[in-house]
Amino acid sequence: MHADRTSTTRFSVPVDAALRDAGWQPGRWDIKQAEYWADTLRGHASPAGHRHSVFPAAVEAWAEFGGLHITPQGPGRRVAPAALHLDPLHGLHMARTLGDLGRALDTEVCPLGEETDTGAALAIDSEGRVYTLDHTGDWYLGHDIDQALTTLLTGLEPVRLTAA
Image 1 (cartoon, one colour):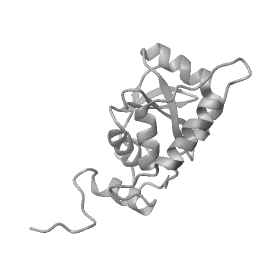
Image 2 (cartoon, rainbow, N blue to C red; image 1 turned 180 degrees about the horizontal axis):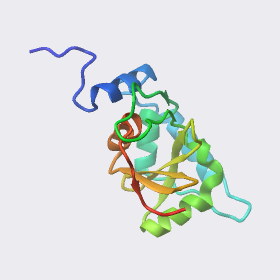
Image 3 (tube, rainbow, N blue to C red; image 1 turned 90 degrees about the horizontal axis):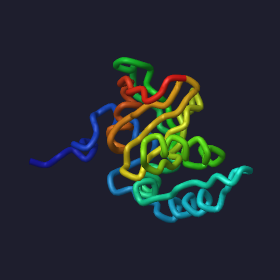
């Protein structure tokens, strides 16, 4: 049996459609852009001297999904689905905030992008788990980028880590 080239088993149909509309395809890998982001983040220090952690899980997520402007397809299941811009430089000036979150979670945390409608920051940890940070608190989106994209693009309710 031969598969239709638009089908995938990695993502659900609405998530796959949103990703493909944004320019993603299986095997997408822009390591040059990911390394540029890694160098930019490593080279940045806040006025108080806070620096970003950069690690393989982040670089891999940037290489595959970095630069994409993703628009959800259809209504959300529990909450409004989120439009995303996966560019870690949205979090360039968040080294202290992400460092604090990393310490609270006993891991390192690096920027991933933002929810474009709300400006909420997206972040990834050294294990590949993904979070969003907004004015209401910090939220866990999934154990990896795939689960996080599904949560965000289908409107599943994230898990609250902290209160405002």
